[in-house]
Image (cartoon, rainbow, N blue to C red):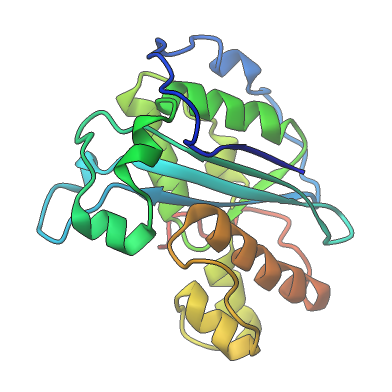
Length: 220
């Protein structure tokens, strides 16, 4: 099952930031071995611009249960507001088009749907620490409360992989090469990179315990 907003429908009206997003975040999180593997794509350029101008344009995630099976997926495009016109560089890198984001919800609505899909009792994982930092930045931009458990219970799959294989921290595509498994889908698409990162996590945590505490969320 996949929950998604493909951008194929009619343009959705702007809606104000939902103030009840924060109330959906539980005050106490339990550490369990059900994982949400997430990958974000963001606005980008081939020239130098402040990182603060980057905005999420896609959230892709998969749910991995306690048996290390992928049981659900979430995918949505997100409409940027700081620089709403995607550059040709961004589209070449991600394959995300202007039409995809023009027909998408803005971040407050997309993020609320993501939190509802996650539910409770899960831990966030990503390839590196970038995704957690970008979530925090977009929450601040839109006046939303950042769910601190994203950071405090985060599992950095890049760091865990390097420790498992005894190699330098590397890109997700290089890790797949080391494991001799093919990259599926399109690299730099959020949902496809989340799926591939989950495949790495499945194999790694079959042979290595899931860390009980936060795993270097600040490391890219």
